[in-house]
Image (cartoon, rainbow, N blue to C red; front, side, top):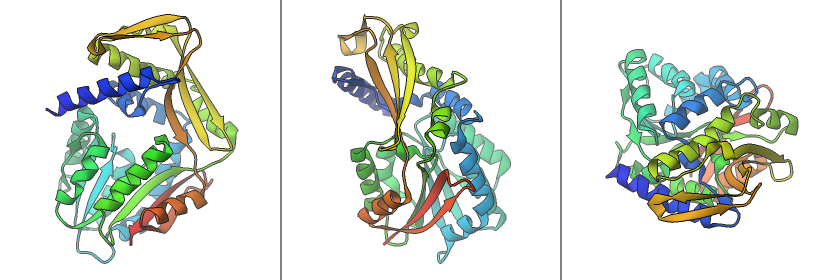
Length: 320
């Protein structure tokens, strides 16, 4: 049933996006099993500073972060939205387990393969940890959070995933979090900060070809799941950054005039030569914007944890 719902969602979203002017596709569909694997390659690039910054934050501040999660309560539920391979989170999990802190871990990811691999690795590395993976879109899973144990909720949303959202989506997402959080519940959100455009473009201009593969895999997924006939060689990847808005945008550009048929939609889509498909937004924030977002949705910033270069911040909010 969940797979049928997901196919229905991707069909409707693809029809809406490719019928728009300009065309777009939703970045949440990057993360099938292949896409999740390619994203691990992206995170390993030396130019992709986000992963190293967040690893550094967790390594430097793991004791203080862990203490803030369980302060004042006998136990809590640790819920990670978009958990992926969980490498960064394992730093916190190991710290919590080593201190015999009472908590349950619920990783949520759209990829069943990623969830299974994470659970298997945690069962080997932290056999006494209570872990229960949830597979699905986290916009859907958020609505179920109050059906968990009733302990304090600590919700992780790491890696600057929030930067992939539009203004409307950010407010929808934070509004949903606020609605399921009770007083004293906490959220821990990763924000990529504004910085030198040169640093940002080196991370997104794709020197190793991984981001191109990541974007083209989205078209491969449509070919497979919706019976589309995208010719991947007819598209190239392009990224740019606007330092005023803080928006990094990723596109696939049609290199020739062409028509793509999607059998599941019973529809064809025309592409002019050099016509773009908007694929992903990666927004960069400043601390003032982060504080305003927290206050708007009923949270207070308890503490911002930053890396030594102030490239990235993991912001801990508490529900009022």
